[in-house]
Length: 303
Image (cartoon, rainbow, N blue to C red; front, side):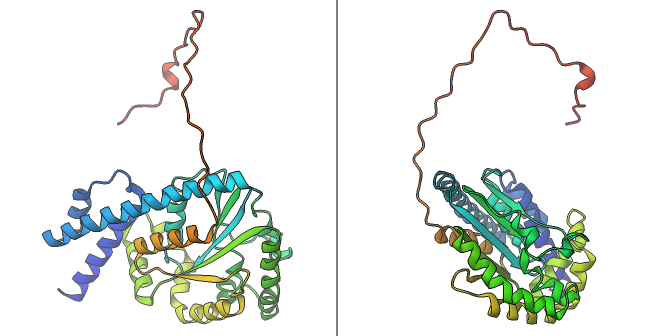
């Protein structure tokens, strides 16, 4: 197989995985297998791997629902940070965590770049407003660690601000923990080659091209600079109150399962007994007449 042919197969496999992300509950194995044109032996292995993945994922999601019930019942407060390079798979694992949960209990925070007003505030101020109340879990898709990563590499902060961040963040996180918030920090680690392949797959997928911003492309060029600041960040902010946990993320599906399993292990949850649910009989009244919906209010049935 030529190098280009191998590359295209890798891109096709990445596209298929992307479609799996959106259609996990409905997608048919045969449809997926036909897209990448694998051999019969590869088809059998793909089907077996997919069955194993979904079996484990659904079991873990069942435990996440138990965790959610426990969080509500006990008033627990948790913040989970997801950091890593672009295309490292943070969004994928967040999506799997949220897939079965109540968004009123577990919510995602993905803040845009700070506006002019926010840039004049205390650096952590805009994050504080999103911290959980009792009975809530907050997932930060990138967090205050932007200052230790993209802001440093791209020159969005000066050296004094960068050093002040490292002086402040351990105390800030200790304050959160003392206040009763459980803080868990994940770094998703991928190789240079894997990020290259995932960026190429996004370029070839019209449904995902929007994920490649000019900043993402520039971050690709500055891979080594990101590596250096990441190493500094992990060294200076890995504290007993809120240690870093590194997720090996070259295999996205394994990374999702490993991360969710580890997260569950960090939580001192127990199953909360639920009372049996009985569906009440619907009341019916002789004088009730349902009004017809005007035809011009109905959407066209194209499918």
